[in-house]
Image (cartoon, rainbow, N blue to C red):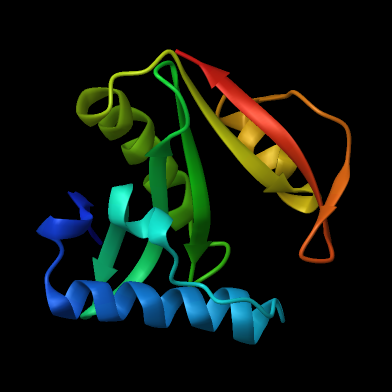
Length: 143
């Protein structure tokens, strides 16, 4: 898997298409979330992704919420249980502070994924809440 971290303007048309295709496959088809996925946040995000066999196998986007915090969202892997999520997150945890200096990385996490993020050093910072009909919590990694 070849990993990249690019701003929106650095993405090729093919990369953007593959990102949107993978996001639709996971969030709309697999998880049944009904929403308009492409949003204006994509324009100001750092897109971090792993390409494998000309497909975006793993992906997340990161964007600044204030001068000290960068938020990760739209985290996905097409193949579950192969370690690609860990590889993607470890790469992101290095790339984000390099390209977007910050004091913390924050994210909204589906409850079932909390142990995965805890193993990476993230801590729960909120109670449970519903987002798109799925139980989430907020998590944070202080850098």
